[in-house]
Image (tube, rainbow over all chains, first blue to last red; front, side, top):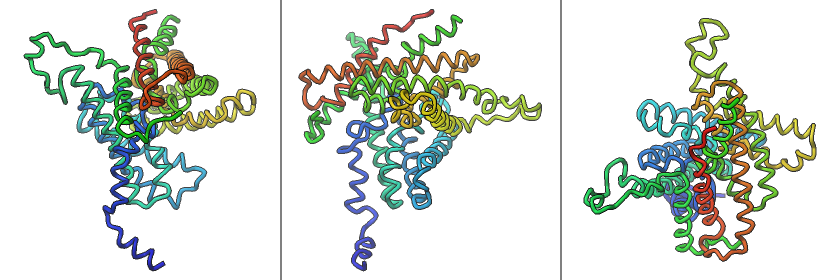
Length: 220
Length: 205
């Protein structure tokens, strides 16, 4: 008993275990490319880097806070109604995020339209609440939430960067491809702006990810 | 009448839930391993969308929207409850799914046993909430349009998941590069299907 206490007291805020909680979801157990959670909806906003950056930050906020709240409440939630409790917590957080976005970045909030609301039904949020926050202490849950949301956001940003760079020749709204290229006959690839290319881009990312990390290859 | 058909066809082919907005991708990827189960899930989605979209339409127009409470009396005209949209919609969806499940269990046990496990899953399917939010954003004129939008999006989703399931059953016999197997190739096929569906763009009835 006393041993156990000592190890808990010794465990630092950023022990190796906690660090892994943060870094694993970005690479090895990435929510989108490996766990196949949370793909819903959000790919639709990856036409522009700016919109996806805002959405990624929103997801990080909702997920970090949601994990903390559920983890604080974990002893008080009756198991039978836990789904409803989780949905309510997430929905309230999303309402907050939505109001903040409308107040401070109105044009981006218009552009994101329904996709802010759809954070509620993003499977990765419910998945982590259910699988991690319900059984773990507050600090690890917070790290897990932030880590998963970051892994999710990183894919979002990568896809958005590829699509905006090749589709409109710009990043964050600033022109990247120099005018000289256009004079030589370079044309932006209009296909990149259309929705199907988001799926194909993610497919190719999964390909690259899995060729580098052989353990992840799907045998079936 | 033309309007209804137009909205119906548009929401199946052009504004398809999966190919244009990527809604409901989680269950789309997870349950599309064989045709039979995906038909079950697809039917359940059509069913639930066809019910929740009109119910949420009524909620939006008589309770939540700006000035929607006017029927209670002139002092309520200035009330705007739209900040409650998300939480009310998701509550209605969860409740409707529960209700539909109980009704089906009572009246059609065969349908219940084939849809069974999928109904509860649907409450957190983004396509359902997405349908309601799009309905709110596009301001449909009356409840008939909301119904045809709901059913149309459901049918579009159904077509997409049955199509991908059939392709995935066949692709098992093909020689796909190992790292691309499973998830990767599914994404790419979905993208190609999306490009095919885009050829319907511009259809006006």
